[in-house]
Amino acid sequence: MKASAKGYGGYGPAPWQQTSWDARAAGNFIGGGMGGSLIVFAALSGASGRALTALMLAGLALVAAGLVCVALELGRPLRALRVLTNPRTSWMAREAWTATMLFPVGLIAATGVAVAAWIAALLALAFVYCQARLLQAAKGIPAWREPLLRPLIVTTGLAEGGGVFVLTAPLHGAATTLAVSLFVAAIVARYAVWIAYRGRLHVSVVPQTRAALDGAGRVLLFAGTFAPLALIGAAALAGPPAWPLAALGGLLAALAGAWTKLVLVTRAGFNQGFALAHLPVRGARS
Amino acid sequence: MTRWAMVADLRRCVGCQTCTAACRHANATPPGVQWRRVLDIEQGEYPDVTRSFVPVGCQHCDDPPCLEVCPTKATRKRADGIVTIDYDVCIGCAYCAVACPYQARSKTTRPKFAYGVEMENEAKRRDDSRLGVATKCTFCVDRVDAGLAHGLKPGADWQATPACVNSCIAQALAFGDLDDPQSNVSQLIASNAHFRMHEELGTGPGFYYLWDGNAEAAE
Picture 1 (cartoon, chains in turn red, cyan):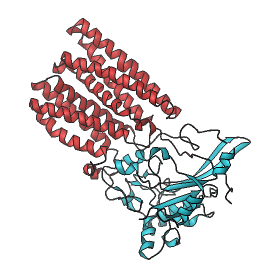
Picture 2 (tube, chains in turn purple, cyan; picture 1 turned 90 degrees about the vertical axis):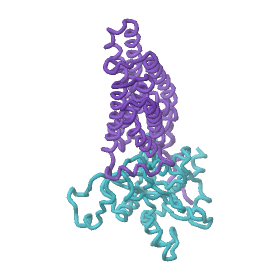
Picture 3 (cartoon, one colour; picture 1 turned 60 degrees about the vertical axis):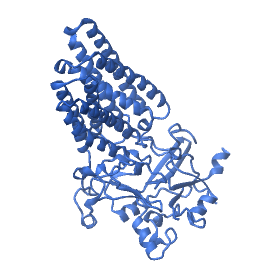
Picture 4 (cartoon, chains in turn red, purple; picture 1 turned 180 degrees about the vertical axis):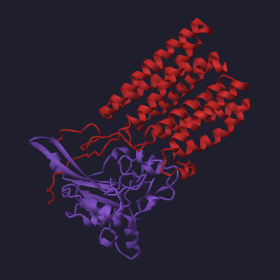
């Protein structure tokens, strides 16, 4: 009688991949994490002048691209501004409010105002955090509601933004030792959180989710962690002529993070199905 | 106070899907959208196989995850426990759909018709305000409210009772006020073994399942 489906909450049909959010929603998390963190790195690097302008505008453009992605998923896009209505409880509304403040401050920072760059960085960090809370508040998806998803999304965003920062270093010339060190720390932290996150999901998610996550984990380990660390290390040893190595490391770190988020949303987003705590005996009622 | 809730007696449900059809008729949901579903669950292997029929839908939770995440306040919870959606406010972000552990919410972005083209009966009940927004079971809130306005008792008077409950051929579904100890649902819950789905999530579903507790304990 208790032959199957135990382990996911009871008896019932197998969970299935959610279809409410697709790659467009993932695009919001990718663009937001990458762009927001790029703004953070711009401030931390102490970039100024044209470099600051370029980094701020690029970061804002990535955040905007993510928001456009999610706007394309709205059933009623003309009502999009209503997303600001409920910041009291909704992390989506809080994300929208943070973005609303980030854009004007970021544009002011792009004009070269150093104080604005720091404020923009704080707002950008808050934006990335809102995204992490947003996804984790989706209680219907076991792989998302795991609390460790929050640091995972934040560190993934930082590694992505840091990756773009290092990738574009020859253009902006602001890749200080501090900024690159933080990028390396973000890569390491991301994978450490990933291991902890994946460990917590050992029994609470379906095998399809585990398989999807394990595939993403391999990409994160080799393309997103080992390769960038090796390339950054080699570039540091070889000196300035080896900048393409560091750039490649940055690119790989960013792409691996983006892939992880895409997998989380579109392949690991299995719901928990319908689960009965007990099976009835039909006709048993007296 | 009033807390409207539903009870499904899993020992009585025969899986006829009449409630599903009644819901679709009452609420004119498009093809593919079922606010009241009945799952057909088989467990075990031959010859030791059991089959269960389980009505599901919005659980009108005490602490609905859909309510908290809604960025627009389109989703609201009434004082009587019924969770509603304002179609004129919803932006169709589907955040509520991924937050709901009961897969109760649907979003249809374009008109759908049973035979591909719009039939006369579909045209009569077409409601474009429900396109591109989240929809779900309302516990037939319009029937409940209209009934109350006329002095009727939801769950006891059919005019004030959700369509799925009215239509159930086996009296497997019941609707009533949990805060009234004399109501049918309170009596059923008090006198039967029961559980709620995904209770461990702390959502406090307003949908109770009755089962034969003694039978499982005896095995």
